[in-house]
Image (cartoon, rainbow, N blue to C red):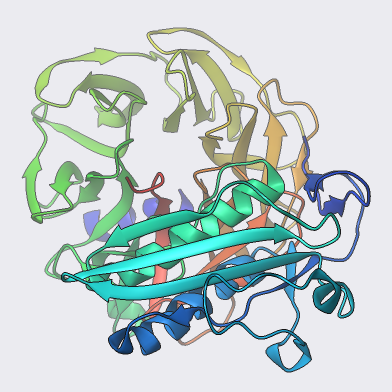
Amino acid sequence: MLRMLMAMTAAMSFMAAPAAMAQDGPLRIEITDGVIEPLPYALPTFVAETGDASQMAQDIASVVRSDLNGTGLFREIPASAHIQRFSSFGTSVNYSDWTAINAQALIVGAVSVSGGQAVVKFRLYDVFSGQEMGEGQQLVANPQSWRRLAHKVADTIYSRITGEGGYFDSRVAFVNETGPKDARQKRIAIMDYDGANVNYLTDSSTIVLAPRFSPDGNRVLYTTFETGFPRIKMLNVSNVTSQLLPETPGTMTFAPRFSPDGQSILYSMEQGGNTDLYKMGINGGNPQRLTNSPAIETGPSFSPDGSKIVFESDRSGTQQLYIMGANGGEPTRISFGEGRYSTPVWSPRGDMIAFTKQHAGRFHIGVMRTDGSEERLLTASFLDEGPTWSPNGRVIMFTRETPGAQGGASLWSVDISGRNLKQVNTPGAASDVSWSPLLP
C-alpha cells in the first residue's frame, strides 16, 4: 500500500513450520514445529521413449527437481551417486541400490512425442518400504507446454509426500518496472511462478498498480492512471483485452480485488477527501458502500468462503487490520501489536491472514490467525510489503526494496514458517505481485 500511495501522490501532484519426516509407516513429510533436514530423494533423468523426446526428457526432469528443491523440504541426491540406472520406464526398482545412498523417495519417468503430443509417465516410490506411492500417472499436452507438464508432475509428487495441494503449476502477475528510478515506467506482466514464460499484458504508457487475479486465473484487476486519475480496469489474460470499470463522477477508485466466486469486485473509493470500501458486480451496477467513516479504509480481501472481509483502516489513529461481514457492518479490530499494519490478504486455507507491518524503522511480512492471535513476523527489511499467497497457502510472495539498489524493487518468497527466504527470478525490477490459483 505504501508504494501505491507514493505512486498515486506522484501521479496526482498453524503456524506451519519446517518439515518432519516420519521414519515408520508410509513416507510422508509432516508439517511440525521442528527443524529437520529436507527429505532426500533421487530423480534419474527421465527416459526418452522416442528419438525426438531426448531433450524434453532432460528439461522436464530438470524443472521437476527445481520445483521440489525450491521448497526447502526436499534434497536431491546427485546422479553421480546413483547405483541403479534406468534404460526403460518398465525397469524394476532395485530398492537396495537406493537405500545404499540414503534415498527415501525415488522418482522415475519417461517422455515420448506421438501424434503431435508430448506424453509424460512417472512413478513415485517409497524406498524404505519398497512400495510405489499411489499409482503411476500419465500426462499429455502440446509439446510447447512441456514446462506445465513438469510442474504438474512436481505438484503430484509434492502432494503425495506432504498430503497437501501443490502450487507449481501456477502463475504470478506483477508490475514490471524499467528505466531510471525517478522516471520509472511500469507495465503489468505475467509469468510462471518460477519466473519462466514472461508475457506483458499492458504497455508502459501510463502508471499501473496492484494487479489481482480472478479466482479462475483468467482475468486480472488493476489500477490505472490512463485517465489522469486512478481507475480500476479488468483485463482478460488469454486475449489481452481490457475495459475500465464504471466510475462514479468525481471519485478515484483503486485497490480492487475479486470475490471468491468471481462475480463481484471489492475496492476503495475516494470521494470528497474520504476513502471507504465499496463492492459492485463485475458488469457494473450501483456500487454498495460497505464502510462509512472519516478514516482511510483500503486494502480489502475476502475470506475464501466470501462471508467476511479483512481490510486496513486508520480509524484508531494508526493503520490497523479489521474484519467485517461481506456486506458491511461494524468491523472488529484484529491487530494490536506495536507498529502499523497494512495490505492484509486472507489465506486460501481460510486459517490465516498475511500482512505488511511497519515498526521501528523496519518493514515485515507477517501472518496471524483470523482473530489476530499468534502473530508471527516472517521477514525484516528496509521495505517488505504486499504479500500474496501460493494456491496451497504454504508460501508467501512479496515485494522487497533495499536502500540504494539501482535495479529497483524485486520479488521474494518465504514459507509460512519463516524459512526458505529467496528471491524470485524476474526480468528487471518487479513489484505488486499476485499469485494465481492452480491452472486447470
